[in-house]
Image (cartoon, rainbow, N blue to C red):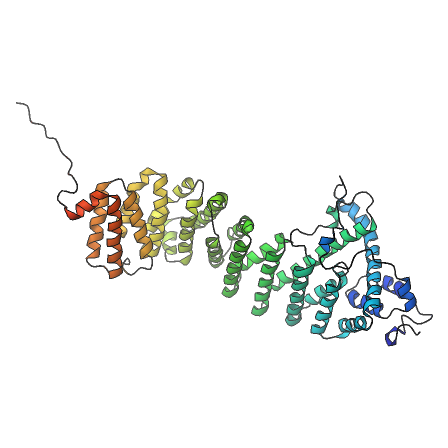
Length: 517
């Protein structure tokens, strides 16, 4: 009749312009999604009949269709060839969007007009919902709607940005991005010398989708630097979701997330530590990549100690195994580099003795050493500083340093006496009875006594432990007596010394020669 109802007076009436020509002249703009659906809703019956057939299927998981297959023996297109094909691909894409709009108008009718009205003039919430409905109709034909979602996310108003980013994360991570591979740009596609229209359309779609996802990543990364705490927290969580869900643009997402370890807000930096730990647990193959990104961040000049502390806490959370010796070796290198910067001289080390950073570093070194393939050379370079830590006034630092030195003593026999001397002195540390690291310290003493080849030194340790029990707290006394009981099982001479101290250890016989007369 009159051009498709009330809304079709201008586009579908007799003598009016061809709606397909109008759509083609309009091109791709920020309102392309609304314009395409509105045109579809207002098309005349004649225009619907003239609509070209769709070349791409209406589907949800587009990567499962297998429409982009590499031509046999074909090389990547390259930048110049991709530029030549892009103009043709844009025309094919425009024609495909027109065909899809006509198909939607035939299928949905009044519903299509209602959705188009929401997209064009609804509230922000209604527009976002309508755009997501359009995207769910067909992934191959969702680019105009995705482009408008990105445009909404780029707005400066925080409430609009938050809602649009939520919508973008939903459509990208649940529908548009392949779960097992990154998107391939057009210049890297292997389409051959004369690709078919369908293959070129698919390649162009993947190229444009990658570009739009890049814009979304830029929006989320910029939002993570916002001064609004709630917006910053949500954007940081968004970076983690994008990294965790899909293997796309990791090289952009990971540095953006790691850089937030240095955020001025302690809550944000602490949350990033937690999110990186979750990422290493849910994706174990990513541990070397995560560590490399954190290493680049933490060893940069002018990085604050608090940022280094949160990075160290994350590294301490990485679960190690015997099969990951290179990973443990890298961890040890990073720990020792940070430790060396604080142990340049005795004054600098003394100033750092009570810092939580030094405690975290020593804990990390102790964790990494058993899994390293060659830790001896690295540890021996820092022996002086480690022994200074073993004689620290802070008993927690003393215990952690002794735990590391117990490993180092196994690599170099010349360190054995020095290690046992430091351990023997620590038995009389004034903070020992009330220390929270009492169990760790007694474990170090137990292992050292059990593996000691000198019976005299083992007896000296036992004597000092018994002296300690005379005025120790019940917990320390019970722990020391249990320790001696366990050690005496492996060293019967120690049990004999306790029972009969006069004859337990034979005194060395000294031969005195008689003078010759």
